Image (cartoon, rainbow, N blue to C red; front, side, top):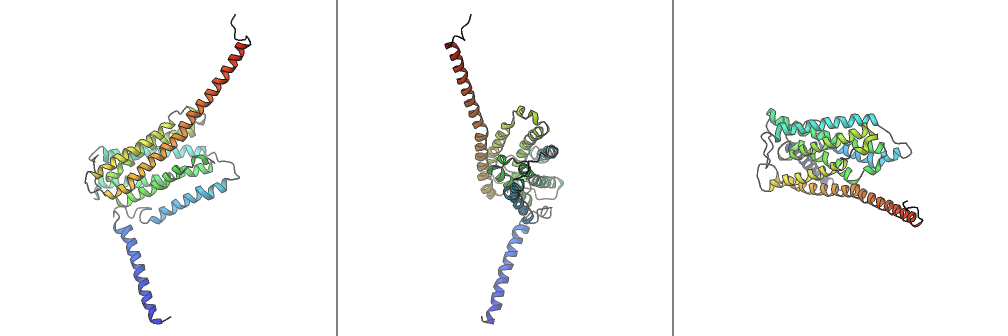
Amino acid sequence: MNASTIPHVDRMSNIYNNSAVRFYHHIFHDLSDPRTREWFLIPSPVPGASILIGYLYFVLSWGPRHMQHRKPYQLKNILVLYNFLQVLLSTWLFYEGLDAAWLRKYSWKCQPVDFSNTPEALRIAKGVYIYFLAKISELLDTLFFVLRKKESQITFLHLYHHTVMPMVSWGATKYYPGGHGTFIGVINSFVHIIMYTYYLLAALLPQYQKYLWWKKYITTLQMGQFCLAFLHSCQLLFYDCDYPKWSLILILPNAVFFYFLFADFYSNAYEADKKHSKSIEGKENGVAKKVANGNMYNGKGKTD
């Protein structure tokens, strides 16, 4: 090799490396909100991505192999504490969303992000950040399913939901902590109050779980929240309030996708059960009629 070409190669390599570093710095530093960019787990996507990769590896590979020849853990006390804390956290997030924003000066049509350092703006930014941390904590839902050997609960919907929501809320915290996008966080927190209350009662009083008749309505609420998110986000197409319209590329398809995933889950979980119950009831009625007819034929159904 001609030695004179080596400096040229080194120069090209340096240009490429410098360009990659500048691009990375521009995306994950320059474009980010200076108020939140140094908060825990926010400066770089690497820690959050590592958590999600570890989560998926545990759920899809290591965890099932570890539990293969073990009895399921009961975890009753842990589940009671965990669900109780999730109820408190969801209640606080719902209250903060209403009191700090949506019941005060926020516009239901189109709300920009307040990037100032006022107490009100920082309160909203911190609420978005806590919401992100809540989505990270909810990864424990799936870990508990694995440890309790509840594999049927770990569906594509479950994994997709628990993987996408931390990424979306991380992006919101880093770039747009507030504004129009907080609407779905407020609605979602309300749904989670209901959902984790159900899980809390089911863990605390398992013998009465069959009386918790409102479980299927949680799925209906979840479907409703995505309809509201879709309609609320669509307003960005008609109103201009300095909130990025490009966010619709992510929000609208995901809202539709989530809706149909939850609708499919509802159909499989509850409509199938209803048909199964009717089928059993029909068979039982058929047997009862045959027995009654047999008794009549043998004279046993005759009244004196």
